[in-house]
Image 1 (cartoon, one colour):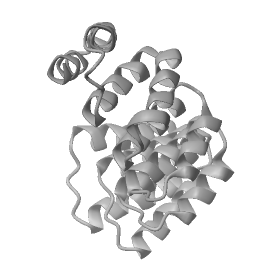
Image 2 (cartoon, helix red, strand yellow):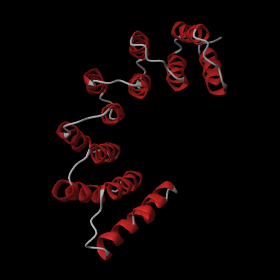
Image 3 (spheres, helix red, strand yellow):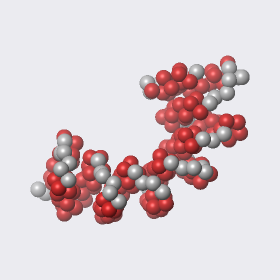
Length: 216
C-alpha cells in the first residue's frame, strides 16, 4: 500500500494516491497506516488542498498512531499550505522536539500570510538557522518590498558565516530591481565578485534586470 501511495505522489497523481489510501482503510481494516503512509498521503492532501482528509489523518495520528517529528512536520506543512495557520501553529507549539525543517515551515507559513513580524519573531527564536531558513526570511522581506530589511538580514547572515547560494542573491537582486534600489544592487554585484561566486545564467539575468530597472 505504501509503495502505491508514494509512487502516485511522486508522479503527481494525487487523486490516485488518496484513492489508494481510502481503499487501504476500507479493504485492509486490520492494517493501520504507519508513518510512511501518513506522510505520503499528507503530501497528496497538500497538493489537492484536501483539508477534510487532512483533518481525518490528524485525528488518526492524535488518537491512534501518535506523533513523530516527521509526522508533525508533514501535518504542520499541510495545514499551513492549506491556509490553516492556527492549526499549524498549534501543532508547532505542541511538538516537543523541533528541527530546522519545522521552524522553516512555520516561518514560511507566516511569510505567505503576510505576517512578517511573527515570521521574524520565530526566525529569531530558532535555535538553528540554516541557509534555507535565512533565505525564506529574506524572501519574505523581498516579497513585501522591504529591501532594506532584507539587506540588513543578509549582512547578519554574513556575520554568522552562513554562505548564501544563488537563490538568496537572486532574491535580493529581484528586490532591488522592483524598487530601483541601485546602491544595494551594486553592493550585491560587488559581493558576487569579491567572493568569486560564479555568475551563471540565472544570476546574470537577475543582474541585467536589476541594472535595467534602475535605468542603466
